[in-house]
Length: 467
Length: 98
Image 1 (spheres, rainbow over the protein chains, first blue to last red):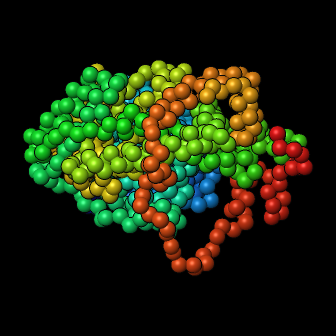
Image 2 (spheres, helix red, strand yellow; image 1 turned 90 degrees about the horizontal axis):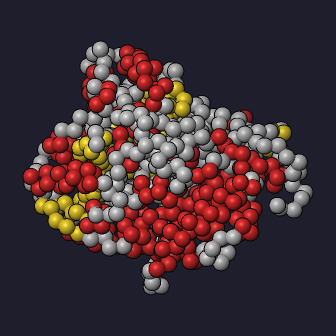
Image 3 (tube, rainbow over the protein chains, first blue to last red; image 1 turned 30 degrees about the horizontal axis):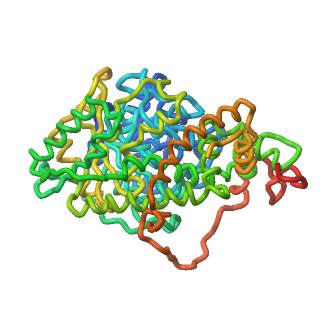
């Protein structure tokens, strides 16, 4: 009997290598779990019935193009779209023998923090189905946490891997910008988008990052990546851990979240790390405004391609421009429209310098502040999300309140830095995530720190109601 | 810099979105709220700070100029709403942009 709630991908790989289970048996176990729990949790938008591979199963967020398998990005405007080519990450997973279970739910075009912006309805948090799993990659996070997939891929622009991983009790890595190919990923904000792994353990995360990362000639923003080391050490000797005041004392951080993070910081010292305070004076205060100018501006440009000409459903009209405008109004939901409008405004004549140009300068300031902190520290720590999972519907009427869910994940993203979220305890019976931030290309350091903390914390990632 | 209904209509035309009356009035309120929040970036005097357009210190990415096969036409048109031979068919464009 395979317990999909507890089996890690590394253990699954071992079972397969030793011939103790077959790929088909493993797949069947996850399909049974999906049959039992997906109806309630709505993690998957598309299920894949069979796959030529027979390795460890995996799920992909539905912004990742899969040849011959519908890819919607959670949007009506891509309903029925079947890619004719694989994204590079899908091709690399295939080449590694991984078998695809299905495509997971996401906020439309990865714009959101709860999956409630998905055109196909929200996913639910496995710890409490009256609450959101986070977003945009809530489907992947909920699937891993509920044992519907041993691991999954997500994508992260402002926090769409880290924040749902935090809310569902998973390990989520947003890798350094440029380490994972975006070829075949539905684009949102191209100077920020990154693909990364959502897993049960830090070692699983390192394994999957090793499969998907590396330079890709189909994505000119990718670079050569240091080889990935599977973490083993259970101490943090010699590691300098910084606690940025602003990321840990930001308005809106729940007391239960602060307490769990504080305990994890104390553990860092007990494990042998040197812990000290530092400051990011403007990165947190100005990070969110900076992001909400740059990301919508880039989105307004990226989403111009949905015009009813080459793919997607078309609304009929007598003239070309009328057809395009009607197709876009019918196909996009409220959040993409809001961001397209905001981004178009910020880029329009007369406002460009004041909004987009100024935000790009703020971005420089944020990068400089993090660089200064990394002169003294190897890793910075903070909560991943200011809150635990919130109730479905709680923030849907107030876009600005929803945007604040990413206030702590956005600043490092603006600087292209890697961030790892690991579960560090419970507050009100719900998981709390610890965000570990490193300099660019420091994934191995984050895995090392995350692994040692994971062992010391001993968090049980199986939702209490499913144990 | 308050956004008026005319601004909403102007931006919607630039973005090629045919908004409903309900969407126009909702966006007028929401865009004002959001711009008031993000306008915070203008508090900082950054006249001497260079802009960052991309977070990596990478300037160019070169690869050998070697031809490779591209998608066949049937693949290219596989998701097209309307195909006409080797073309995407669209309604007539002989009109002024909305």
